[in-house]
Image 1 (cartoon, protein in one colour):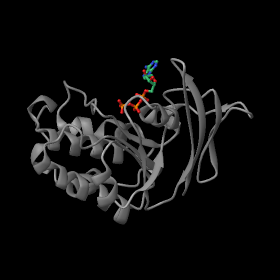
Image 2 (tube, protein in one colour; image 1 turned 30 degrees about the horizontal axis):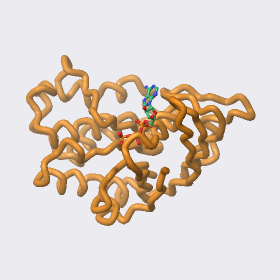
Image 3 (cartoon, rainbow, N blue to C red; image 1 turned 45 degrees about the vertical axis):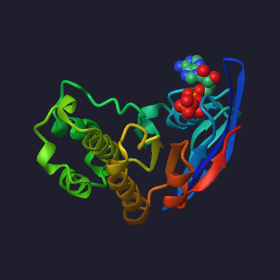
Image 4 (cartoon, protein in one colour; image 1 turned 90 degrees about the vertical axis):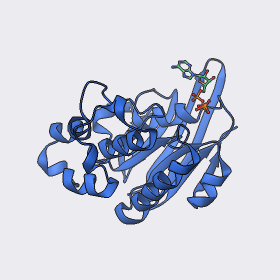
Length: 208
Ligand SMILES: Nc1ncnc2c1ncn2[C@@H]1O[C@H](COP(=O)(O)OP(=O)(O)OP(=O)(O)O)[C@@H](O)[C@H]1O
């Protein structure tokens, strides 16, 4: 279940290029200064931005291949993307945010039940709340839960700690470690912080 990434893109005159493989049960951190293209790489992997050239494959299934003319739409890539700004649906309660993608999946594709995800993330007491009433850490858990319930084959996490105060960071780091160790998903992780990289024992891909 390895995710192979080889992408190139010129964006606003900046050349963005990355080539790496994310193994299951491994966190691969995209690291580098602001504006270097870390989020752009996640967007290319998720299918939200089209690379100028390259190839992306998950467990041998080609998601994008410029030479072969393959460009799988985002909804078929099975990428659990947690955006930096979370993008929870503001008018839907936590329960409906969590189940949004899960309800649209064929039952055969689901690999986690809502009860499992709710227990895994400890969000059972939040189900009837609207996103605006959640703390940063609670909202982050809901966003991760929504991504897990979309039955992803890999996760893309964009600076998941950036909006959290220090006290709440540890809880989310523990969740991410359990995703690595118990769910054994490949995780692609954007950060600016070397301390997060060392805590998560992440492999580092430095963009420059
Ligand atoms: N929607 C967009 N359209 C055009 N160019 C964009 C868009 N988003 C980002 N860019 C440009 O692409 C380049 C890479 O931006 P990107 O957000 O991927 O960097 P980043 O490393 O994630 O930065 P940060 O650490 O600040 O989040 C920058 O030059 C940026 O201005």
